[in-house]
Each structure stands twice: as structure tokens, then as C-alpha cells.
Amino acid sequence: MDSVGIVETRYFRFAETPDEIVLESGKRLGPVTVAYETYGELDGDRSNAVLIAHALSGDAHAAGRHHPEDGHPGWWDNMIGPGKAFDTDRYFVVCSNFVGGCKGSTGPGSINPATGRPYGLDFPMITVSDMVKVQKALIDHLGIERLLSVAGGSLGGMQALEWSLAYPESVGSVIPIASTSRLSARAIAFNEVGRNAITSDPNWKGGDYYGGSAPARGLAVARMVGHITYLSDEGMGMKFGRRLQDKEAYGYDFSTDFAVESYLKYQGDKFVERFDANSYLYITKAMDYFDIEGRYGSLVGAFSRIRAKFLVVSFSTDWLFPSYQSKEIVKALMANDRDVSYCEIRSLYGHDAFLLETEQQTKLISSFLNNV
Amino acid sequence: MSPENKRAIQHADYEQIVRLVPEGSKVLDLGCGDGRLLRMLMESKNVRGRGVDIDEENVVECIRKGLSVFQGDLDEGLADYQEGSYDYVILNRTLQVVYRPDYVIKEMLRVGRKAIVSFPNFGHWRVRLDLMLTGLMPVTRMLPFEWYNTPNIHLLTIKDFKRFCMLNGIDILDEVSLVHSRRVSGRRHKLFPNLLAEEGIFVIAPRKI
Image (cartoon, rainbow over all chains, first blue to last red; front, side, top):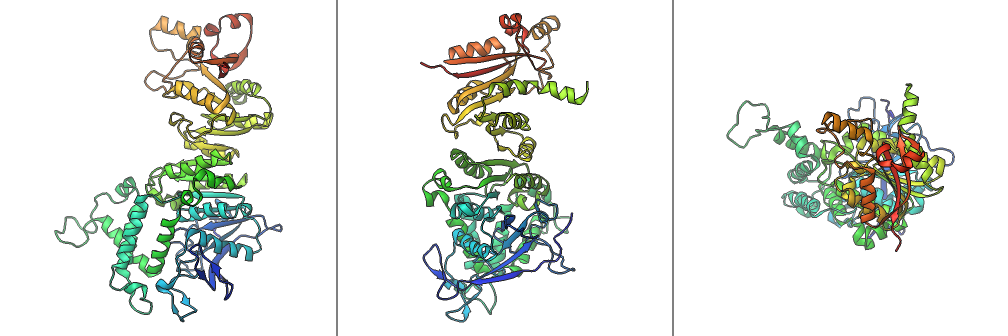
């Protein structure tokens, strides 16, 4: 399949003093920088824009490569490009790093203009609705009045849902994938374990570690826990089973025995090279706070305001945001007589499936967008 | 027989259902398959429709056709659908595969003001003769499975269905007999539908008190 080719991350800065944005918590934040990428061409009447919202560890780099030798294409390169699910021959695709992140947008690792030092825990708490508010500023800046669609997996799907509620007039369709209207107690619990791993790392120092050693062990453990929740029992059984890593027999010590241990260690170590621990704290908290029922009283009541057409997708072995949570969204939309379709894709990949099940997602999304 | 002909006959029953649905109705199609019936209803009767199907590939195909579709199990029920939220709820050749046909029909009539139900008639003379002569479970064009692999777990006759409606306060508003998926309406068929129809289509509604 074709690629969007060489792409470049760009930056949009706004909310300069005294026009800081007011966050859901009531605190003010500014200036705000947004890292974003775009693929494809915006058409004459600016009606073909699709916003992609990324998940916990994603970034603005959703497709293509940054230079010809770049070994790592964007995180959803299998889905965004010419002839792909989000067909860049037809759509103008935008992806930005959310506020609170650490991939070019303003977050706890950015310089606090008040002190000239990184924010650390002085960074205000952000929510999914704040992420969306910042995205809206970017979309306005790009001159787009109405998005053809907002799509995303996991936390990205939560942002897509938030778009339909916060800006019902500005969204033609919404594609929440492997997502939820609120986290279950179990999902919050796993986030809390991750946060505890970070905050109990001696290098964390109350979040004030910039310029010194980062809480790498804590962040790596958080990522290991996270990775377990992204995979299914069946998938792990198939990928690792009880296979040993580079050995024929048990070591009878605490070195790595099993392949699954080695995989988690690798994922943890790789993650600390590219992610900021404080961002991990803020973003998981934003996920925990997201609660449409809580905010609007009920899902059915919340969706009475939406205009967009919906395609909701879940995966059979996703136990982090299980299918029943997607169905709750769909049923609340149906109760409001909204145009919604729901599909549960059979997959062994668990929650991670939204990054991996290219074929079926492509069929669903390309035909859905075709009919928006 | 050419494939086109074959398809035309296979889906001649769709035409009968399309005929029964008034222009502009709001329709819920349970077990909507690949969405062809809904598509026909939208194109020729301008209905507002939604489908429900359990099969992932069918759901993908419905979305390809631009339909609104929910992937779900009919036996899970229609609990989340509001009372009287559809003009017609359709259950085409699906009644005999659900676990709780009585429950599904009652739910259809709660959610829809009317319902259209079609099913293969196990009382057809060929089925009866087959069982009598061979002593084996009949395998017919409408019911082409062996007893051990059939999805049709609640086989019924037209007479069974009428009796069910009578006992459950359901009015039959219209009735169509099909042979070879085509409508038959001669005097013989009117008199002996349970013997002569391969398939029955019924428009039903809760009995008005």
C-alpha cells in the first residue's frame, strides 16, 4: 500500500497571556503549543477534513515518515494514506498531540512561563474536554468550520465522543474505536498501579526531576502493566505461551526466564526513551476523570444534543474497554434515534487490536466515510 | 438456471415484504443479513431503516451499503429499544433460529406498532410426506439442513403460528403464502395454507381491546 510519504510535524501556538485558555478545572493555561501533522489536501469548500485523535502513548505523527531513512512510520500508518481507511486522496487528515502530552504539545515537561523552569506538578490538571478544546482551536486555526469526521481508538475514541458533545455543529461523524464513555473500576485501578509505580520511583522527586535522572524504572513498570491490559489472554498465549527466552531450561534464579517477561521488559525500556513520566500521570488521570454519564446525568440525555452520525467499533477480546461499554454508547444513541452503526470485530489482539486489525477496520471505516 | 434468475427467485420473498410495508415507514429489520431487504425498502418505499445482525461479515456488508446496523443477538432482546419506536419490526426467515421465539415476538410488538414475520412452513405437504415415507427429518429447499447441523431449532407450521397469535392476544392483519418464494393466492391456497404454502408471511399487531 502507498504511504503519505515524507511528512513534517508543525506547531501552532495560541492562548498567549492574557488570553490563556480556561481549563475544565477552572485553572488557566497559556501559552499553548500544539504539535500537529496533516496529510492530503483540504478541498475548496473545506469539507473533507478528518481529525484523528491519538491514544495514551500516541503523538501527532500518525502516518508517513519524517525522513527517507526513518524506520518508524506514524502510529496509524496502516490506516492513513492513499487508498487506505482514511484515504488521503479524498480526505484532509489532521492529527495533533494532545495538551498534557510530551510530543511537542504543551505538557508538564514544557517551560512554565511564570518560573522559566519545567512545569512538573505545577502543570494544571487537564481533562479530555480540555484536550478537545485545544484541538478545536487548532481546527479553527486551519480554517475548518466543520469536520467530516473525528476518529480515534481508546483514549482517542473518548476525545471523538467529547467532540460530538462539545461541538455538535462542527462534527459530521464520529468513529470511536475500542473506547468507552467512562472507565470501569478495573481500568482506573490499572491506571493507579501505573501512577504508583512512577511516584514511588525515588527519581520522581515530586515530579521535579527535569534536568536530572528521570523516574525511568517507575515509568517502565507502568508501561509493563499497561501492556498487559492491552493484550488478551488468547493473544498472549499464542504469542508467548510458556516459551522460554534464549534458554532451554528454567534458570532457578530471578533473571529472565519466559519470553513474555522479556517482551514486557523490552516494551518498558523502549517506552522510557520516548515518554515523560509526568505526562503519563496527567493523561491517565484525564482518562479516569472522563465520565459522560457523570457529567450529563445519563448517556441517553447526553446524546440528545449530538448531530453526528456514528460508527462504533469494538473488539471481541478487548477486556480493558470491553464491547459492552461500546454497546452502551450505541444503545444510548439509538434511544435518541440517532444514525449509528455498531460492529464487534473478532480479534485475538485485545485492546491493541485497533492498531493491528487493518483489514476489517479499513472495510468498515472507508465505507462508513463514503456514506457520511 | 442463470445466477440472476436464481437470485431473483431467492429474493422474491423480499418483494412480498416490500409490498406489505407502507411508504415512508420507520423499519427495524431483525436478522437483516447482508442488508438487501433494507436497501430495497429504502429505495422503493423510502423507509427509514435500521438492521440488526449477529454476523460480523453481514454487518460490514450493511455498512458498505450505507445502512445503519447494530451487531447483536436477538435473544439478548430489544430491551434498549423504546416502546413503539418503529412502525414495523421485520423478522424475515429468522423466527425458527432464535432461542426464545415467544419472547422475540412479544418484544417486536412492544418496539414496533406492527411486525412482519416470515418463516418456512413445516406443515407443507412435502415435509409431511417426506417424514412419513422416509422416517427421517425432512431436508427441503426451505430447510436444507440435517438435524445435526441445522440452525433451525424452533420449527413451526403456519397453524402453530396462528394458534400462538390467538393465545397471545395478537391480531393477524395480513397473511401471504409463498411457494418457490413467490406469492400464491388461489382458492386452494386460501383454504389450505398450512398444507400448500412453503413459507408464510404474516403482518401482526397487538390485539386492540
